[in-house]
Amino acid sequence: MFFLSSTSVLLGVLGFLFCLWFVRRPKNLPPGPWSLPIIGYRFDSGLIHEAFVDLTRKYGPVFSVRRGPFLFVVLNDRESMKQALVKSGEFFSERFVPGHIRWGIPDAEKNASISWSNGKPWDDQRKFSLPALRSFGFGKKSLVPQINLEARYLADEIKALHGEPMDLSGVLNKATANIIVQLIFSRRYEYDDPEFIGALEAMADIFSLVSDTDPVNVFESLVHTPWYKPYRDCTFKLRDFIMSHLNNHQETFQKDNIRDFVDAFLAHDISKDYSLDKFWRILLDFFAGGTETTAVVTSWAILYLAVHPDVQKKVQTELDVVVGRGRQPNTNDRPNLPYCDATLMEIMRIRPVIPVSLPHMTSADVSLGPYTLPKGTIVIPNLWAVHHDPKEWCEPHLFNPDRFLSADGQTVVKNEAWMPFSIGRRDCLGMQLAKMESFLLFANLFQQFDFKLPPDQPTHSMRGHPGLSMPPESYKICAIER
Image (cartoon, rainbow, N blue to C red; front, side, top):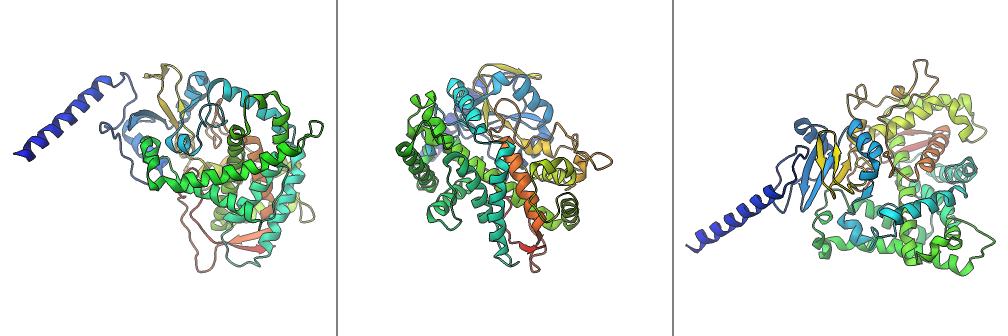
């Protein structure tokens, strides 16, 4: 009897919650799957961008879904993204802060992080950061010697392997991290430096420990469970690494000798509004984003060209003709290297580093096509879906650099559906640096090495590893000096 009455109570509570959910559900939302009250829709673990694409087959390119107490609208085609992020960007430019960011980087959403802040703090940080970075060569040709110097250190590390199978992800991270560290801290680390290795290992763990489907993103009380402790520990290890540089800069700062981005901050009026324990979060954005993006692109490039040796041969032939072997490639060569450029663009298309862009949030009730999105709706741009949309690309799941070339193969052809750095007001701040750095590392590596999969591993998964970014599954490669 007690069992029956308890069951009745439970059913009654669930029925009440369902009625409450139905009554409070905003009208005129995009269609979407039914979600459980409180819990919301359950995504299977794995690659969330693929799960979103699966839902488009039933609900169309724009659909809504609930996760916990939050309403999400997912954009899966170029038209909806352009409408929301560009044409109506003023209403879609706020940032939703997931639980793992809110608790792993305290106050990140308030005023101390370019990626996660909103309103005037975000605007002030962006207006300061871009000019300051550009003054030290950010995205400019003046940074080429520094990138090419790091490319030489990277090549020396790879040559020392003598063609033996090796996972290059670690050394790629060291190279790309050194480029950004020199820009913000005017410091270069040796690849065997324990402090440097520790910071990079912590960052790699952060990117692999957290994904878009983590329950903590919507049920923040889970941060108090043991499961979340490794992520938080890694975040504070990175904080200590960055704070050591900040404290050193504060002690040695001279206003008439601005050495790097940190000195530019200390000399600027914005430093009055940001103590060092807030400014470190801005630097974390640059350090993590500037390291991960280019390293992952380069890792995918090596894997794809090892799997497609015909493409690798064309890239190397073009480099041999235009650049030769006697000097390093530079950005002046880029217009004369259309096949190299197209290949790199195809890498970023078929395997975008961030398949699902950082979450946006509506700042007011706003229309999107025939739908109405209430204020506070979380908007997810699925870049993967656009990059694999058959309406935009012929045979999108095939690796084909020629899709970015003119008929005569001499000119790179742009496509509006190519958006690996997102679009609109909150596109990637480091986009220009990432493009230049990726191109120079790519050209330097394929100028000097043939990359081949080990004889005992002739194939490899191309699906990608779920996390904050999407690197390849761990693989070993043989780099043979040309």
